Length: 251
Picture 1 (cartoon, rainbow, N blue to C red):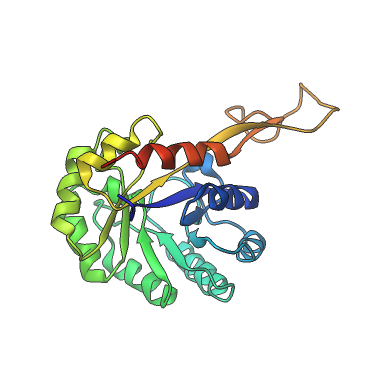
Picture 2: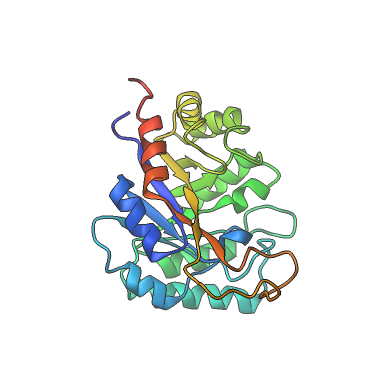
């Protein structure tokens, strides 16, 4: 399994460095991972592109919630892609659905055309589609290089059977990349069961704030919120541990 590739979902510049130093081939750069990832700022993308020796794919998602976008949201997505292309991003990650949950062919085609010649990954909006095998064929017809999926289940571990069938059906027409809840404890089984050649995962660890003065009675945002003085960031050790665990496959 020496050709197994690893993509790490990150939301910080430090996370990109951590993923690279641990041996990942690529990152998916997002903001707002609490909502599953949204479009990062242009400033973050420009700084990220200065980091060498790791591929940079950028999430294009204007908000959390569903994947049914209004016309102005699609224009925003196109504009974000066009702006980021000038920074030399290697790839874009997006997905648009119809009201019935099927792949929105026209909307995705618009975004794909704007993204070229960069690589395109269709993200886990795929897992919200009613028929993953029909959705797979649609993405192949659109010429998308890669689909990120948990096999239509909440996690890739639960979706291994469907992932294996998707990978078999895809052949060399599109890369089916398992992602969602992949850890060092389950990655070996997921790779063995599915035959995946690329794996997507996050590897976060708590980072305590350096603030000495703290207001325990104050917070930003709604009541359901992350702690003000703690955050999660990508851990080099966590990335390295998962890659090492996956490396046992076939060993």
